[in-house]
Length: 112
Length: 111
Image 1 (cartoon, chains in turn purple, green):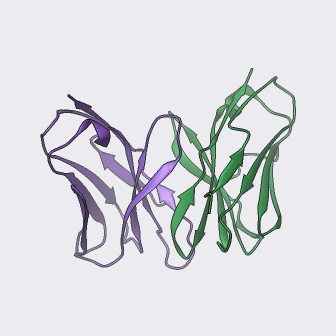
Image 2 (cartoon, helix red, strand yellow; image 1 turned 30 degrees about the vertical axis):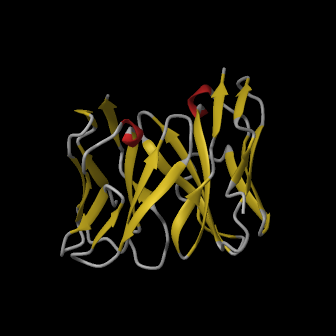
């Protein structure tokens, strides 16, 4: 079955540092989504990537999808305490089914 | 729009009791998803609907779990009888094509 592997599982960085979170699939993806979750809350949509080689940015967060559409990275520049939370990648493994699956998440802590 | 609304936010029940979780999707969305999140297994898709029709319920763990969507603005997830291992956060999400929007979740504790 389709699985999404995220790395690292947890990350602690000093405020102002850059960081990268990776999401890897064994199969081609038909849509890759990044969400952020704070403890006790729902998931907040960050970005969606659909085309191989696509890159999107929002404020200090940049997400990329590789050409084979099997790996994505989320990069945060000059991290802030407000970036802390759990980052999850999600994907639609089969075109048109919208049967979204999710990675296990990366827990980010930013030290002020 | 107020987003996806779930109720209750927290539920504590005794083993063997029936539990019903409720969800109001975003108006106009044609897909509705029920997920369960635990520390051990992460976010798991239980069932999803398209235009109120269940499309895939392969993620529903056992016959004790059932979900309905009687109309476009309401869905329920029922567990009967509940067991301690059902304790988790249950999320409802809705979407129109891409980009699923999630509710705040229901934290279920079965004692």
